[in-house]
Image (tube, rainbow, N blue to C red):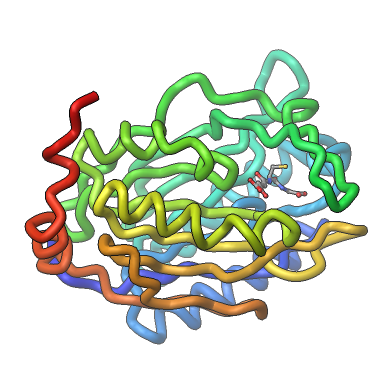
Length: 270
Ligand SMILES: O=C(O)CNC(=O)[C@H](CS)NC(=O)CCC(=O)C(=O)O
């Protein structure tokens, strides 16, 4: 593993596939021009809108998004995580909320289907019933081991509330945890940063958290603050509230140092 720059992209995705892919391309370009070699896009980066529209356009969104990720990785010669987009399940009219990691030569490195679905009545009056259109993944994410970029673990959004998933990743050697999200503005203001820092600190891993921000559609407001956090829990970069990118250096020497200073992973009893 070498030292390198990673980018967590922050965008305001809307119910318009092409518009979102154009916005994502601009932000990938911006990140690459600043030197990023690993670039993460947020949950719902290619489509964010009403559940019924997402289902109606499911096949088109899935195909265009996969093609886009492969093209961008090859054109910019970087590794890209597409942080969550719908892929139709053949049998039942639902989709998997899927994250895909693609290499600079356009190869698929890892794929993860979100296992924890956001079925929550948020106290701001918005009701989320992700399971009405999304099928829960049945497998824990695997860790992709890159000779250059370290061991990379995937997850999506609401997963961040379930520390056992990240324990699984760190016990399989993860160095970098991806947590792409479309966090609600209401929960995000109190929980987002604390949860991300907790996952970084307790697993002594880098956290790369691309995010949705602003007004996406109808009454949906997302929290923003895409960030990169180091294994000590220090926030290295925070994209604030506007579309943009958070960029920071991922360093193997910092991982070794923190794991020497705080060897909590070695002290696990359970
Ligand atoms: O809102 C939308 O349209 C799109 N959102 C999403 O796709 C997903 C599932 S509904 N959002 C979350 O998981 C938010 C979690 C969260 O905010 C928390 O854990 O507090």
